[in-house]
Image 1 (tube, rainbow, N blue to C red):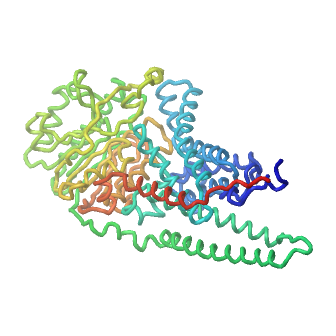
Image 2: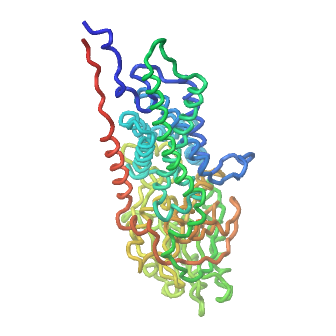
Image 3: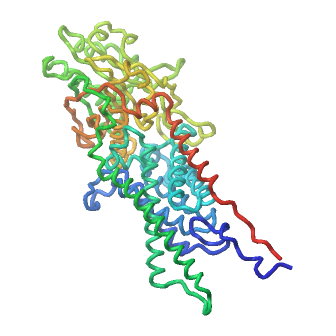
Length: 597
């Protein structure tokens, strides 16, 4: 027969997060925390680019990111995790948070599937939620491991949470081709700009997670302190004085830990608050590499007309050559040196266009004294060899040769799932949509830059600028590293949505990480010039047809991120996070079962 005291739980069996013994209901209503997690997830998505145009919080404009909002919304999730007593509760709350966050981040996929793909509205909405829910499993697993392995110390818990959360972000961004759109670090493009050239977007996300946990733990401790001050610990009549002294020693220990945590929190916040003072320190090894005069073209051709011969195709084949011809007529001292047209600006294969299209265009570029280069998005390939989503770089010498084999060519490397390649077992899903989908060939990871006008120009297409480690692969050799980055995109698939603003913030972070200007030529927006400090210096209004004329300064040299990511990719981040988790988990006290009689 078990002793009366055999059912008591030892302190080591209590949840290190909530301080509750096993089997004790979690503090707070489950419905309450469900609502908090949904709200926090929506705020996490809004932090990347505020989506409400009619109203925004003070100091934040529509389409702008907010680092503090991202930290605060993640802190709400941490508060929810600090109120659980079993790992499965933490898994559920993190999954709800992440599903709400990701659904609110890329809800605009609904537009491409329903509006342009003809998928029934209910099925398109279900597909978006299912995708978000599947990707949310990474974060649910991270929360489950946090609940199961968390050490007792709040400071160590903060380190473990930051490491596990970053591992979840890495897994989402790399596994199964990767879809890191909306990663938390992108919301920090302004607040933590100084950190970007050092640690990249995932390192910034880890710092934000550390700050969020510290903030939540501080608020939780403050609430506990206020409650204990209002309702002091009770003592049985006749209890010895050492019980009171125990509580005093416990309070002193808590005070020491609070001071240490406050110092750490203060140091982290100081690096963020005064980041502008050392913002350029990470780019101290980069230097100016001359100026480049550019025209960036924005055709604003509606997506439902883009591939229609009588409407969108005719507009593209008329307007883009007109702009190129106009640039070629400007005198060489004041005219553009580079004209960039967006992704699939020419929506037909070169052979389908014929000499009637190409001859006037190439003659204008190759006229005597011409000094204009054109970077043009178009599909390439054949039925036998396969197709690529590509860009041609044409300059006067190669235009005069009239042989495409001499043109600079870039083939997209990181293809969009369901858009440019169809994953196994999902052919039935893409067949439901009326979208020109297909399996494209993949270009090489590292492709030579285009040497033109004294610059080394490196294109990337569509959401390839989402993968900073892949762009950094071209920086392994500083002598051949790009001096200017160019993104060619067509976001018209997603309508007039926050996707335009989100993609702009992503490009800004790439410019910061790599210390290079980023030129963006898009169909509907955001067509913009971003300097090496991540600042938007020129931008066209969205959903308008026009050209953006600007002068951009190329850069040479390397940032710390470009050096380590160019050599090892994201492996240093993986190793660092796994090491932190292993070390902190090994220091966690083992649970001891209470002995029965």
